Length: 335
Image (cartoon, rainbow, N blue to C red):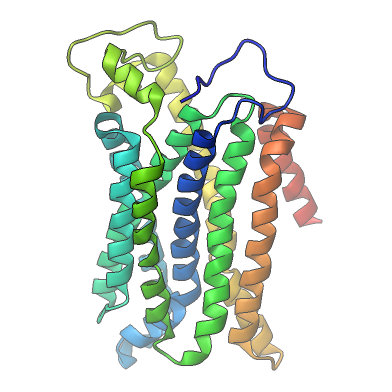
């Protein structure tokens, strides 16, 4: 793999990209496509799924049950991101990516056969566990292989995979919804397809050279400011991360930023289909139809935002983009 650092950036951001870089992006991108599909599939079908699984006497608790299923999925995401990130430090990014894709494909498919809310919630946690693992591993693989001048664009392309997946879920639900009350099961069966991605991943991508070189040379320093730490046995990476002052500072700040943005995304995206559907029904329109249309429009806009984010970040400056662009968008939305 090409080294990710350079004293002088080439004239074009893509000048140093090789076919190997694009294969890494393609592999991680399709992993994120199905992450997005799986995430938005849950949002779109959680209402019909709970209506089908809850006993008639408990239908009044449908919103609480739906919220529980989403919360448990996110809990699995958090646990999977942590566990998968640690495991990838020991077994490699590529191998962890393969395990993650197979895992969430399997448990997504099993979700379709749920016969109770408890079973669905359990499968959602396990699905979220592998989703979180794939999310962190695919991101690490791209960050460690793409050169610095191209990395923001690559990250934007990668993130757009989530938007494409969410759009795909909205489109599939638009087509499957008329099939009846069990159409939600078919949505999860479609989620089995990412398993075939493993056939591409096994043959077409290599592991991160940055990770492999660190393992060969037994370099376990947390950041570039930590100094060279060479030990015969690798320290437990999570403890090592928080024991290093600079690593701890960066991790805490990144977590706080991620928590705020994730809460904002879920606070909006989770309820858009239901809100629009209810609003349409209140005005005498077909609620499920307009809920699916709202999902398509929202996710299409997200794809555009993901694709341009890397270019905007380089144009404005990465820190300035993070500091100012979300605030300006929030101001526009309030107006």
